[in-house]
Image 1 (cartoon, helix red, strand yellow):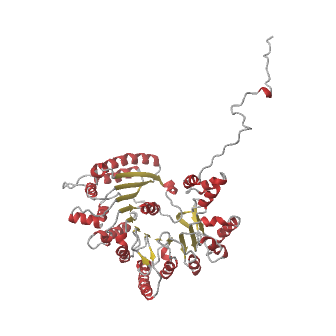
Image 2 (cartoon, rainbow, N blue to C red):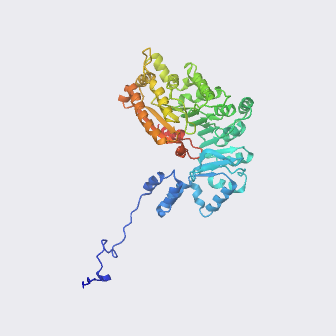
Amino acid sequence: MAKKKKTTKIQASQALTPLVPHTDNIPLQTFHIPTELIMLILHELSHSPSSLMQASLVCRAWRVPAQQLIFSSIYLRSDAQCKKLQKFLKGHPSLLSNTSRLSIVEYEKSHHLGNLISVRTGRGLHSGGKPYLHLPGAMSFIPSLAASVRSLDLFVLPWRDSTVHFVQHFKRVQKLRVHGAQSISAETFQMLLGELVELNDIWLSTYYYHLPQNPESDFDARLLRAADNSVAIEQSRFSTPISLKRLVLMEAEHLPDLLETLSNEKLTNLSGLGYLYLRWTTRPIFAFRFVDALFQRGGSSLKTLVVEIPKRHHMQVYSRSHLHFDHYTMNPELSPLKYLTGLRKLKIITGNDMGFSTQPFLISDHLALLYAIPSIHQHRKLGPLQIETLHKVQFKIFLELGHSLYVADTFSEWMEAFEPAEDGTLCEWTVLDTLLAELPAFKQFSLDIVLRLVGSNERRLGQQFDAQMDDLRDRVEACMPKTRQSNQLKCDYRVVSKNLEDDLRSPIFVDKDADEDEDEHDDE
């Protein structure tokens, strides 16, 4: 019979020595992270409200700076939401002192606001559907927010007296963004410019609103109001006009009454205007002269001009774009761009993240705009001039591809643009390279392509595009040897899926290109 193996029991006192030494008599060591470093860490999370909420629970040292970022931007959209926020803030009244940006949504219908999303949650934003700014819930925020808010975003339809009364309290606002600008009257706009004396940044957009039933009659009525308002301004007395530094016009050329107010020297001082973002309108009826007046008054101080060309899905939009090209480039001597004598950066965008173009990119129109810039026009006419001129030129293209055959067709048309013409003339990319190389202060040319894939097999489309894009980049470098050799050429691209459009959507009332340019313009 086999003997049983003896088993030995290890008493607790005979347990193995732990790897970590006993530390009863050793004081715990604490590490202090400077507040500046904590803020740098939290700023990396500033686009994710949920991450900031988690960061505020790490420890006491993180709580306050995290809460400052969380409440740096808030939005109001309904009376119920105002009451809910008010109830939360009863125990934390000091949090609103950190709010520098306030977004107000008061839309007459319960409506999903297109691609606008909430800064708080990152989800799609809906309006409350009822007016509420005159109610106690919204009015209660005025004393706490009026002193701290510097940026005010408005999505209001229609404008009521209660809306104007609410906005007038924020006299220290420096940046005003008005979406659905066609809903605000010239008189109300004029009143706001007179009240918001520290204003230096204005954004007017007509996105997300339906066209009037009779666009021609609406435009004629606005022309009459523009004339009447101009007379009224001349007969009135105003304090010192506001000094504008940045102006963004998103398809606002069919609003002559508002543009007339902006260009009136009694209301605005444009001598310091350094940045202009102009998205060409797709409306059927508009006039150039009101934007031309802005170029005439503020063009000499302008350092950055961004021109956004609408997507070309429809022939009517394409023909209207050519009306703009003809107006600005047909005769450089008469073009309103002749006033841009100090321009340093020109950015031309084809399409945008809410409207990808389905047409191949053609450089001829962009060259025509470049030729209308005074420094380049004088350079071509008189030869090299040692004057302050363009530093940067950027072409940004939003392109949509539907299936693999279309990828090949689109890029075959692109590739033709890099070949010499049959008569032996150089391709236009080489002409651009020669032109930029001769500019005395030029620093960088950028080609930025954003491609949206639409199809059942987006991965295969993406792989095919990568190969085509490598070929395209090689062609660009081959046609622009002078710019490439001087390390002034930058060619970049990225691919997005139509199913992942949320990656492209900006926070509420934010246009990515306009905001990306803001920091760079401030540095300059």
